[in-house]
Image 1: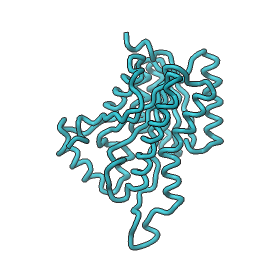
Image 2: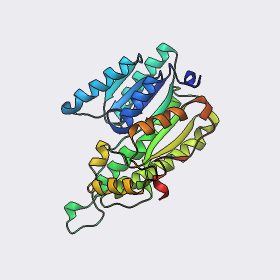
Image 3: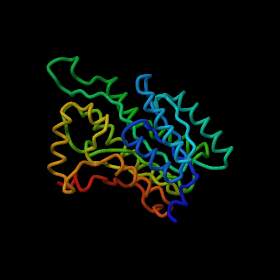
Length: 266
């Protein structure tokens, strides 16, 4: 009964080839949604991307993946134009947009050597890719009529938005920024019947986590502290987003929603 409100519509997943984005693409496809996926992969990882596309197809859902930088304005316009053409032809809309992009510089603010600290280009790039890009994609979807009433916008964040970890400063700033963007989008889009929420996952074993220096300590702490006794999985997050994508969740907007088994409480 509940799946009828998303079946046959489209989801746009930014960061669709790994981690949370991959899990969401597969979960929503299993529930009958078609998937537009935006990712940035080199030749060495394209085999995995192709396997994700084939798995989505095996569910019976339609799928189109675009290998582009989400922060490239020109490429974004090309993808938006193609998406608009697709949805106009099949008479549908993009119901769900998920921003799950992990691409930033992991360095300290202060160190003994200049080469070991963040510079303005590092910080600007990290915030543009991991935070500000959600605004530009949302603008295009709504203002081009691709997303309308019943639409859902989700941004992946983490407890790193309000906690400190060595080398995580620029990413932490990006997480805090994307939460602010979500609050603003929620208020501005409420009259249009579109919701926007931040999803705060617990510590999850993803490729992005493994790039953080000292990630083993993060994992050990989460395992010891999480009252649910385990790490969060990408599938936990994907199932939560699937539920929040239903029409029954239309009054949930502007929130920071934890999907962490209670991890951030302790």
